[in-house]
Image (cartoon, rainbow, N blue to C red; front, side, top):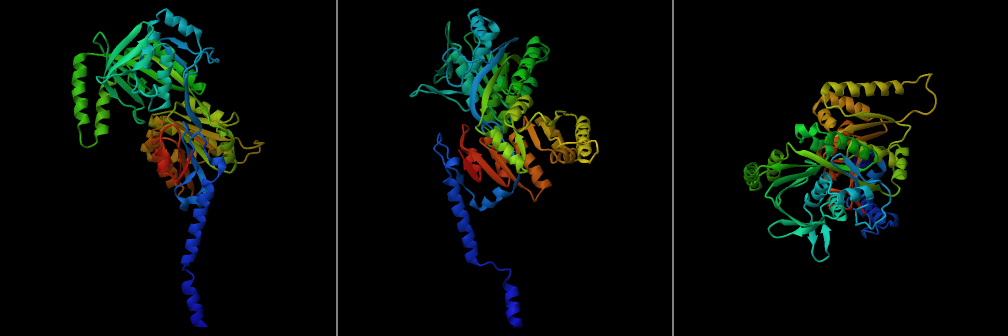
Length: 492
């Protein structure tokens, strides 16, 4: 009897192989059922849901934090050129167009076409910028533009809609732009490529008068830091800043357009540097980016653009469902604060009954004071009070990427921020890089090692965030398959 008892105690820690096999088979069948789910089937991409890590099936029911990208995840990533500014004038009424529009263009403003006929110099310069500053190629067989991003396609199609059509580039990189006054030729000398870290792209061209022109487009915060002092003090900058803020408040994606004339000797010296950087065996991309930084300075602001990206179907209902289940939703985006906030209201992430705490400071002292005040306010609301009646008011934090960099560098600031962020219902991080997205997920994982996190995104810039979370969901959308291939679960 004693031997029998000892034998039973010894074997209580052993799990039969048959049970492990049964559990793996259950997870396998669960994966099949998920992939057969008709509701998750995407007809447009002809793609069923893919369970690429069936060992994580049970984790899906334990998620407490969702980290989501905005563009292509909450929104459709189908861009439509809606409004723009040139000089001190802004164009685009927002009304339904009365003329036939090209794909990715939804623009209406008779005043713009009138000014174009009157040879408005600022307007023509801005539209030419749209037609020239890109790295689009033309599919000769289909006769359509092949663009790296929907944003770029929208900008070039808008220029074409306005009568300035990019007609292609030959073997010598001579770009032809068809205009109402005949074709114009530009020799493309260099392309400083867009990356999610740089948040801008530039093209250096030589025009018919042998002038070398740098044309740049990118996020307002990035371009502003690279404008000349004269441009920063100009009426164009003041008016454009006001216009772009208004565009962002409407939920539109905004870009600044800038350019400058390069002295030939300066360009030749810089071109030698960039060619040397491209020949580097180690850290080539970093070295090229560092050289690009040297030329993209002292620029002149010439205008801005505003593109609309519509929400995905049932986004608001989905977010409300997750929040009602006690899941905290964090949105990490590269967009301007005003744009992200507006989309947050549209998506049901934010509402008029929420208290919004905005963190945009970049000075350590100011950040300590601001985050400290937020914590004091949250503490006072957490304490029961006889003066407090009705349901508890919900809270949200909106933080800028530049502020997050400072927060991450200071341990005390980081703890203060985490204390506040983990007690609010929603966190919206704007103008963040792919590395910052991953860092934010990692912060929560370290702070709450027992809580399950889920990241969802659709582009290569979301891969680091997806890999960092316990569960990664990749969307096969308009930005390639990197996110879907890197994720544990992939959807269309």
